Image 1 (spheres, rainbow, N blue to C red):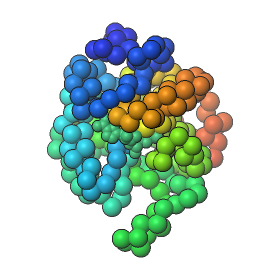
Image 2 (spheres, rainbow, N blue to C red; image 1 turned 90 degrees about the horizontal axis):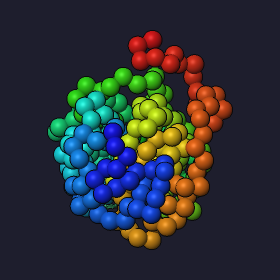
Image 3 (cartoon, rainbow, N blue to C red; image 1 turned 120 degrees about the horizontal axis):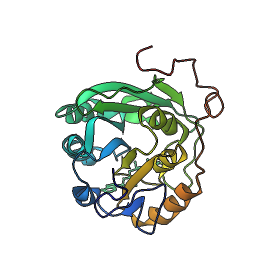
Length: 236
Ligand SMILES: C[S@@+](CC[C@H](N)C(=O)[O-])C[C@H]1O[C@@H](n2cnc3c(N)ncnc32)[C@H](O)[C@@H]1O
């Protein structure tokens, strides 16, 4: 796999144009060659007016992903049925994951629900490639909205990214926001490529990503409260 993907030079060895690119992912993704992404890990906007994004993802992810590659997409519970239908058109359902929110749980007034977890749907491009055993529910490390109103926790993303990809794999987040998932990918030594359409987030997100240290896997330390003694094999 070359370091350069189309016009991009994905991190962690970031350059001026690498890693996080300002612009519209619908345009930018067209420059990514077929089958060159190992994992899409993303949190698209999910509102009534933006559900078409999941239709795009359901078509573009199978083109971008290598065979067996996964897409993890954060999904609002209220829109879950529509989101899953969009992704299922060309992808294979893998699992449903969730992050328990730690503080500031939003009320969903239309259903009178106190929403305590963020759902993440995972689909694969064909049969999923083997990966390490995964917990399907983790806790957020705490609320941090310092850069972005919709900023997501880094540590749960790192847990899943690290276990479903390997060193040097290329992780894509087309809706990068504050760069939480690119920081997570960088921290476990993955290459990453992100797109973000709102220019106000580019500089703080880039600074945040590059300030994230690359740390080796430390079982039982960073995820001490979440780890279970799963075997480190796909068929244990
Ligand atoms: C839910 S937020 C992502 C937040 C991110 N996970 C974080 O932790 O900061 C979705 C982001 O997608 C961006 N976005 C929306 N449409 C886009 C597009 N067509 N191309 C690239 N980015 C887009 C928005 O500006 C927003 O920052």
